[in-house]
Length: 440
Ligand code: PMP
Image (cartoon, rainbow, N blue to C red; front, side, top):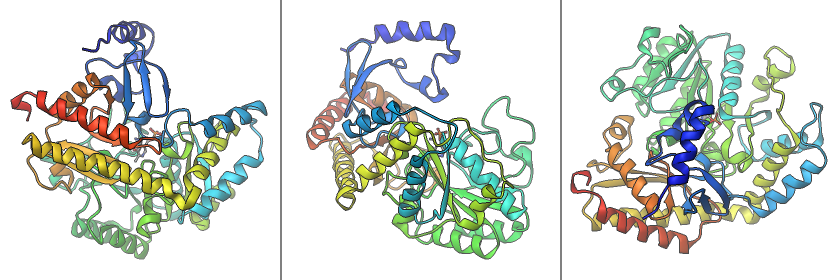
C-alpha cells in the first residue's frame, strides 16, 4: 500500500501560499492527492513519499524524449553557459525557424512564443487581421488554451447537439471572470459533422475570419476526423476566404515531425505547435503561409513576448527535432508500436475482465475510456463515458506504480520500453480485478 503523507502535507502547505495549491487548475483533480515530484529520469518519476512510477502523463505531453534526456540536457547546459536569453537576436532563432519551415509543410515562416495559449492567440489575431473579419469557428470538446477570446467550457451532451452561433450568450464561458463579450465572435459547432460545417461556413462566411480545429480531437477521446472531413474543411475555407488553423499543440512533433497535417497531407493556412516541440522546455510557434505571416513583419500585427525565442528554448526545440528526425524518424515508428502494444493490451484486458471499455489510439498517445459504446467518434459519444470509473482506475494505477492523467489521455515517449509496457499491463490486470463491480 503506497502512502502519500508527505505529498498530502506539502499540498496543505502549498495551499497557504500558492493559490489553489497547484500551478495549473487541472492538476488539482489528481486523486487521492496532487502528488509532489522529487525527481524524474527517463520514464521514471519519483514522488516526495519515495513512491516510483512509470510515467505516461509526461507533463501533459511535452516530454516526448522522456525526462532529462541526456543529449537534450547536455545541449541545454551548453546553451546556458553562453547566456540564457538576450532580448536581442541570436543564430538559434534562425536555425530553429529554418528547421520548422523544413519539417512543417504548412510553415513558410514562423513566429515563436512561450505556450500553446499564446501561439493560438497570435494565430487568431493573424487570421482576423488578414481577412478583416471577426468571427472564429471552433468545436465542442477541443481545447485551444485559456485566453479570454477562445476559452469555452465543455458543454453537457444535450447542449452539444445544437449548433451555437446565434447569440454570444449561447457560448458557455470557460471561467468566471472572463470579460463580458469576449466570446461574442466565437461560433461553437459540433466536430465531425460536415454538412453542418458547410452550411454554417456558406451562410456566415462574410463574417468568419478563421476555423480553428485540432486535427485529431486529442483533448476529448483522441477522436479521428471522419474520412474527408478535414479535406472538405480545407476546400470550403479556401473557397470562402476563411483562414484554416490547425491547432497542433498536442499532435505537432508527437504524431510525426510534420504534425498531423504533414501526416494527412492537408495544408492549413496556419499551424500552432508547442508541448513536444520543446521536449519539456517552454516554447511554442505559429507557422503559416508567407502572405499571412508577413503581417508580423509589416508590423500590422503585434507579436510580443520578453522571453520569446530565448537561447534555452530554441536549443531545446532544435535538439528535440533533431533527435526525433534521426534515422528517418524511426523513433516515431517505435513510439507508435509501443503505444499500439499498450493500447491492444488494455483492450484485451477489458475483454478478459468483461469490462466495457475502449481505447482510441491515433499514434504515440491514446485515450482510455470506460464505455458501453463500441465506437467513440463524436464528442457526444465521448461525453457518455464513465469518467468517474476512469478516475478511480487512474488512482488505483498510481498504487501500482503507473502514473496517468485522471482524464484518460496517455502519452508514450521515445524511451518507454517493451519491458515497461509488460509491467504496465500486469498492473492494469491487477487494477481491473479490483475495480468494484458497479464501476465495471
Ligand atoms: N491547444 C491545444 C490543442 C492544447 O492541447 C493545449 C494544451 N493542452 C493548448 C492549446 C494550450 O497550450 P498551453 O497549455 O501550452 O498554453
